[in-house]
Image (cartoon, rainbow, N blue to C red; front, side, top):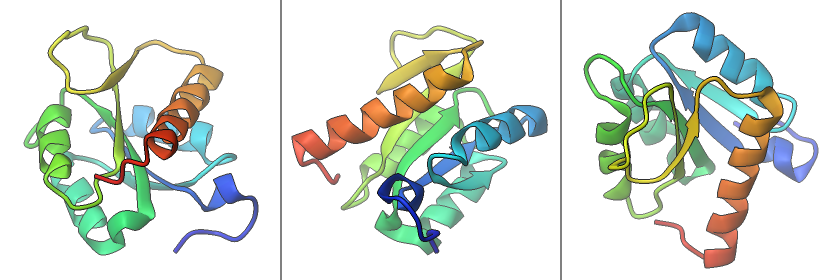
Length: 129
């Protein structure tokens, strides 16, 4: 479960990327600010979301992954009663992506800022799914 500490440290963020180095960098970048869970693909992400439920407030996902892609994962999440906010990270631009996109490469603080904006926007809109 989430760690004790500041309110942002208790916010759970799921990071999904099939490339181990990218997954590790995303995790290390976000860990000082959030409780980070990791998944190596969309199916593993769905299992974590099922286990953690609405505790997961945001998902940071790569777009292109084998099996279940980032957009397909987002489509599954959108069907949940309390879906987490989704941030796509990708080296490929696609105007059809259903949500906010952070283009690779990006600075670590740009990732932290994008996740923070996403969570704040979700809170302001009162949206929980």
